[in-house]
Length: 347
Image (tube, rainbow, N blue to C red):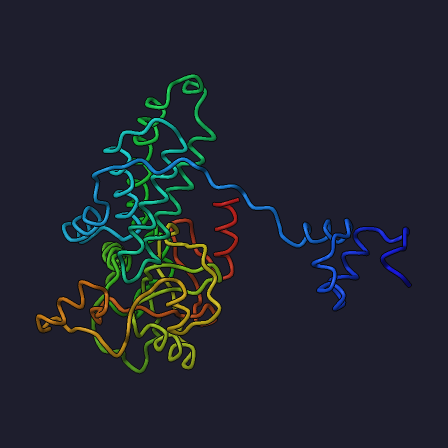
């Protein structure tokens, strides 16, 4: 069959035939109109980038973020990133929506590149940008004919309320966790988590508890730990050592519960659970080179450059099959429900 002279072949069949045979390579350099149309189908159309440049500003978002985290020990990286972006908008003169989005995108990338672990920050920056786009698209009817400055002031006010509601998530998580914490039960935690601390403090007001060794007659304990972020497949990014705890808990049938805010959910699907997967997501750490607090001046300089990470700041991925439940401000979720929550948020 001569495919060049046949007038009965449709473009779809012609394209399928060319892609499934080596003849496709021969036709790539021909002037055949059907082949040219098929080649156009090979490359999906791309959205042209905006030619408008990001407006210039003297605001140093990296210094503002680092100072915010240093001065407030209760603030989480996603919330600190959101507050840094809000301050950026408040202190930069903007005239259009396009300028605003370009400014946020540029400085978000700058902030993420400055941190050895950008995953929790990306949860905040992406969430805030999504919130901003929704606010522009679904503006109230009272602001339909208003100028951009009025709309900008309205969004900044609502952004502050958004941060305030996010900070209240810990109390809601503590309330949802009460059914898991019963009288005479033993809770084992690992590392430092602001959410777990608030959870145990809230439980102390409702239950009588004591820190003691586990008697042989007591029921099996349970693990409750925090997380810096939750990935799309339900796995968590946590302090180094949590993965091993999950393996041990699974082996002895001890449930592992994760207390985490839903704003730490990120649209990032890991292909595995090792150091290379963390590196693919932008994490810069070397478990063979770390500091313990009493470091030399040389290590301090390397730490500032991101070459040496404090051992307490190192993270790893814990797979979803080791996790029994996620305790969030929206209720109790299974690891499989994380992707559904992200779909609700973004689509």
